[in-house]
Length: 281
Image 1 (cartoon, helix red, strand yellow):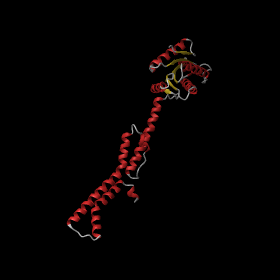
Image 2 (cartoon, rainbow, N blue to C red):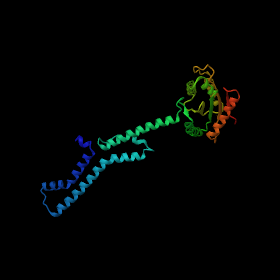
Image 3 (cartoon, one colour):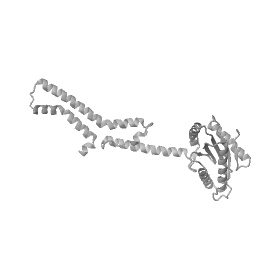
Image 4 (cartoon, rainbow, N blue to C red):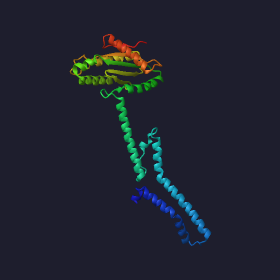
C-alpha cells in the first residue's frame, strides 16, 4: 500500500483498472441478486456502469493531477506572488517530489537574488549603500516625505587630501580610513536615514524630515567625528572632510540636489577644508 501511495503511475493504473471493470462488477452484482437477464436490461446496466466508471476515473485522475495544476499556477504567478515558496508536497508521489524540488530551487534563487542585490547596491569596504542604491532609494524617500510634507536634506562630503594618504601611507591605509569613516557615518545615522559611498572618498547622507538647519547640525557633528578618528599609522587630526549641505526643493530632481550640494562642498574646500557649507538657495 505504501508503494502505491508513493507512485503516481501505480495510483493511475489502479484507478484505470477499477474504472474499466465497473461494468463487469455491476453485471456480477446484478446476477448475484437473482434478477432475470434480458437484452435491454443488460444493455442499460452496462451503459450506466460504463458512465459511472468513466466519471469515477475522470474524477480520480483530476484529484491525482490537481497538485500538479496548483504547482503550474503557482509557477505562473511566481514573479508577482511568492506563494509557491510556502507550498509543501501534497503527496509522497512523483508530483510531490517535483513540487518539493521546484520550491527548493526557487528558495535558492530567492536567496541568491537577495545576495546579488545586496552586493550590487552595497559598498564592500564601508558597508554603506553605493551610488546605484542611492538612486533607487531617493525617490522612495522623497515620496514618503511628500505625504506629510516633510523636508528632505542631503549631506555630501569627501575626505580632504585623500590621494596623499594613499601616496604616503599606502592603499591599505586608505582602505582602513574609508572603513573607519563608514563606521563613523553609521554611528550618526538615525534608523530612517540613508548613507552611501558615491565613489572614491565621497559620501552622501540623505536625511528625511530634516530641514537645512538640522542637516547642518548633523554635518557638523559628523565633521567632528571624522576629525577625531585615528587610523594607524596616520596621526590624529590627519583625517578631515569637507561638507556640503542642501535641502531638497519640492520638485527638484536628485541630480539637481546633488549638484547644489556638490557646489557647497567645493565651496568648503575653497574656504580651507574641514568645514560645513550650506548650499545656495
